[in-house]
Length: 337
Image 1 (cartoon, rainbow, N blue to C red):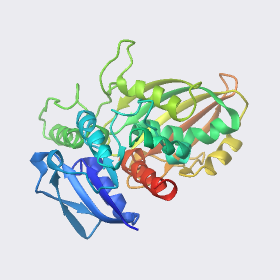
Image 2: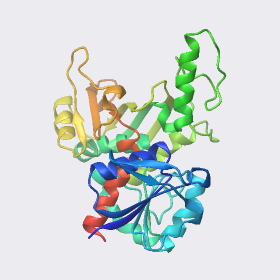
Image 3: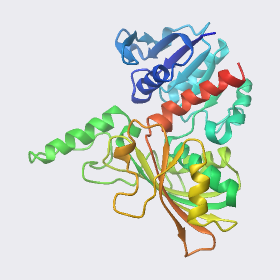
């Protein structure tokens, strides 16, 4: 049996990646519909290497007969249209931040908490976590099972693609202007992103953290364990694709690097590349287009009891967004519909 699938936000970075991954993985779809705002309606977008789809206007689209919606249009648009699609009978897998902390909406990383998908019936919506959370909890799950994580301190190095195509263009244009002695003022970011790092992603909150940092805290608790303490510093860096994270853990039981590497390597979706030599680690540039969560620099932190440090890297558009959504859809049709 084939399914009817709609991709909302089909002309954005993540939407285009969703269409590509559906085609790559031969998702059992009899029909795939590309949806976006009225200004994109009528345009063509790629579906795999050989096909194109005509983009339709989301606001005018009737979801009746659609089985699965993969949605990444922005939180405000999702708030309006995801319930509309669910009411028409579709199961919505939503990549925006709007539904993630709704207690009636499961927040899912299939390698970590696939069973939570069963809760989709409450609203007809399943939430895709934040990109930085997805790669971190995928790597942390086997560590938590082996030694119980008490506390996480994480600093992220997040690429411009996480802020959309305009952000990537700003990095490119500012880089070009530098070499011809021109100055381009930032418009997407608060400061120049070229040859710089910006410790500010999303809006500031009352406690001094940013919303991106807050997301990592609350989403990790919802997905992995509400008892885990998380402190995050999220930083935008001048790369195009791929997020990296320096993660420090405090565990309840001792876990040396040899055993940590073993349990990490056994975790679905995780690849350990950790040679203690120049270049014996993975960087964002190398993981672009890859599906896995890569872990390097595994080592004991001797400054605290049962301390462990990791370097975690993943393609934020794939596993951090589009691939995770497609994997949820695959598990949904395999086990629930």
